[in-house]
Image (cartoon, rainbow, N blue to C red; front, side, top):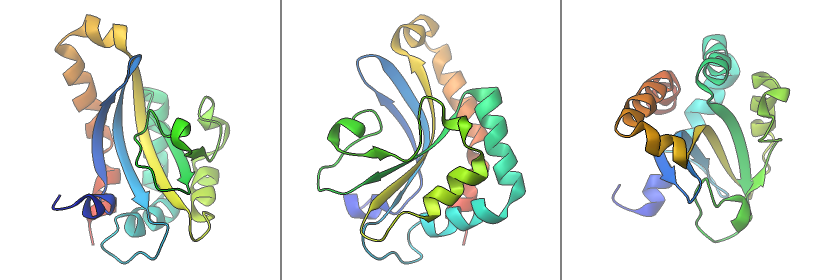
Length: 161
């Protein structure tokens, strides 16, 4: 990306580490000010609302791959990552420990209700404990790549105009 702000507009595959876990997946951001069509959020959220195949794909990714569909909001100036988001003021939109207690449709509806002036984020993220990742060695890259491949339809829906 040419600039940080430009990167905020785009859907991104990510791998993130903290002292306990490896987090990986796909995420998108929603501006706390106006957005134009250069923001991938403007394509993905409507696609999620309308496309039953994408909704079913999310359910399958959660059940088969352990990928969680999460939403967060934020109102502040600090930059943050998935792992440190809550510590820096990001608010979970639903219970992240039991995210599937809400249906995919209910979670999508909550994302549409983010008020103007609040930053929003959609995550499709899996977590692997650090010690398990270390035991897997290089094979962990195959697991991550396989799960990211599952997320490709969501990425495509976000970036295609």
